[in-house]
Length: 360
Ligand code: 5AD
Ligand code: SF4
Image 1 (cartoon, protein in one colour):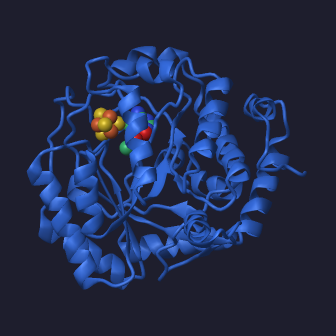
Image 2: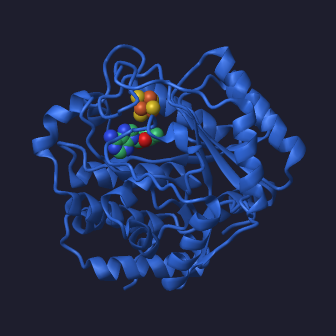
């Protein structure tokens, strides 16, 4: 099937509503990926640095008002150990993730970690996902060695965004959008993403999410199914949710459609997708994803990083995890690219274009 990056909103909606052929869609997306970016699967080691958050998103288990678990920050030396062992096994990209925490202590901690990496480990691409940060802090962290920033827009339709965030001045749609635009405009490899399967969310909303990402011309995307959590306000609306199968197929369609719209970006097969289905990894990759994020958070902290319920907790060693990933990817004809930071081709091309009018 010949599906191009100029897919209309109507045809996107048609696929999202299941009125098109899923197998043809997935195949077209896979074809686009192989032609544009190749069969490589890039690994991004994720470290859930701190579960503290000043925000109160209605869907998230880490929200400020959830007092049913303890808050942690992983100390410097423990994070360094994780970097060193990951690096020794060939990982060249790490994602530092935390709640949104604007206190100096946290920012200083991240800055020191980035400086340590820049000084001690060569050829590593550092990704940050720590919420909306003022431009001054972003610049500081970039100077310290970070290259990529992930800030999910969560829901690009303002009305929907406002339905899932408190109207307390701390969760303004315009602020989030501006923050993402600032990141995009200040030289970061820029990632965003959305929640899929929220109560009340329509195929039109999801189509607009995809077109939003196309319009923003992002470099990376991490989007996954919404999964309910008992200690959140959104738990009350769980009866409105689609079955897991429904949220899974929607997520896979979203991955494929985005791959077709933006052929050279990095798209992750997210943990949330793998939580829905033990074969979520393979299905995500087969639908057009090319990034997997093994969790490197030391085991003792993991139970306290519950964005949603049922999050998979693998207790294998990193060696075992990598072997399993290589086998699973190999079985679907894909190869794990160790030793490479896996910069999104989309960004590399964007930079070339800026430098000399070069076009993709
Ligand atoms: N289900 C799925 N993803 C969630 N996130 C937060 N809560 C949930 C949930 N209940 C995602 C958000 C956030 C990222 C860190 O985790 O999209 O950006
Ligand atoms: Fe905090 Fe992010 Fe959870 Fe919102 S989604 S409560 S910002 S960790």
